[in-house]
Length: 334
Image (cartoon, rainbow, N blue to C red; front, side):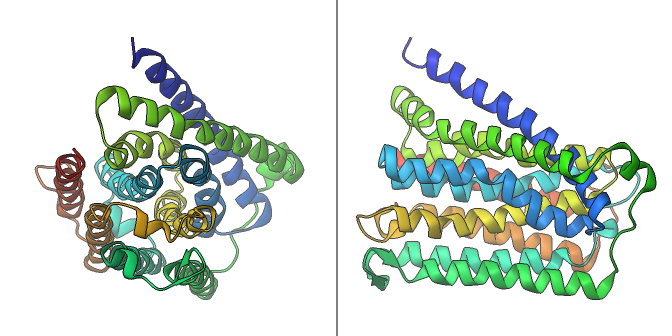
């Protein structure tokens, strides 16, 4: 009786987010065609920002309404893990061409910046109350914001040097308009934001009825739901043949999720957010760093062979790291 209603609400949120994420992917592809923007850039900035709105809403709600910093930190770092794990799913789904052979090298920058920003988070979590702060904001917050902006600028410059604007498809321009797709994109974004803002309270009630810690509930339960837009967008982009858009969305969402920690830090008025969160989250941050590092290795080594004809050894490594982190967090949070 205690968990039935929250579970139903959770599923409803998940369904709304998944459907809105699918609409986002379609509109973004058409906007990219109409404007001539590259698929990788649209995935990294436009799609990643909007599909991370549930994490933004959930993180802010967790610290302002629920008063649970562990729920916010766990959700954001857990969402990074799910995004990186989904790269392994893409690896397994691409049967005709190996993922890391087909992916553009611009994603190297996104993954590498992810390692750097996650490293800042891990060190700050381990430092705890010893992190320097200005008023109630930790020193790591401006570093995360500046790092994210530098990542966007660097990736955009690199992509502009490598390739010119994508050609505008005549039939796409004839069938739709930029204004219409912009409105459609905006409506889907509002749905994602509304459903995402509902999730922290649901996850908090489920954690209480099931006896889960806030950190575990945030890292797994809420993170899974809030990454549904990324999953829906990624699968839709694959169906459209826009592999770079799919990869850019996942890596860009991970970057944006880490940056949301700085926004949540501003909203948490009791002191630096990461100082009030459990140090156990440092393990999740390190796991995300390792997974991002594996992606960098894959983009450099470009492995073609598949383990048991299913996926590359990079994908197996991503899955292994994710599976290793979950029970450690659960046992630490009990």
